[in-house]
View (cartoon, rainbow, N blue to C red):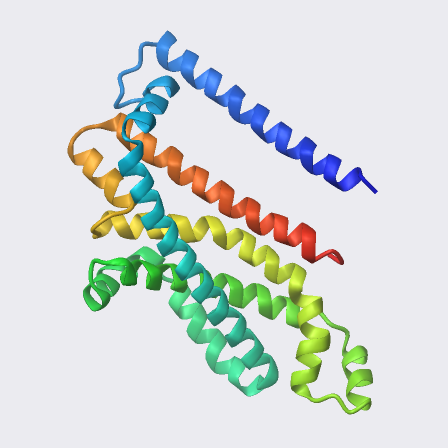
Length: 252
């Protein structure tokens, strides 16, 4: 019964060991080859930069994390709602799916100038961009999950008087949850990435804004410090969703 927790601990241990090994190789390469900071600063200098600028980085982290989380929640809600809609109303699939595909065929960052113009330079534009990026991924994973059920099972539960909503709630959604949660897990990294990229194009704060300002100031240690912090946010977010999957989607 303890095999799963032990395996999780082993995975965490391997991840930490891999990160430490990478840091050691990085440090030795940067110092041994005497690389300039604009090529590759040492890990120790990056960590020192994080400590010395902890206050600003903490504020920027909270700003970016708030945008990513808000957009993530909204995008998940939109994606799942649209998937349930086209499942309940099959005729809507021919309209919604091509439209969603057309929107997603263009890189999300291409919409940034328009979204910044419509919603301003504050948090709202970043939340909208993240929601757009996340919603399509969740939409596709939810549709794939909802369509996985056996037609005979649907006919059976319908023979007992179940309507479309009951079939979706009692049969389709439980079957689809493993794929939905997989889409949610992938979208965690995408949400942080899109938030940061949009901040670099126009913002009043956040890690993307810090990176942009540091590049203008030719402070590459600060650039790497912000990148390391952003990567840590993504890993934590990814880990939380993975924990939810292991804890609650036990039938996967």
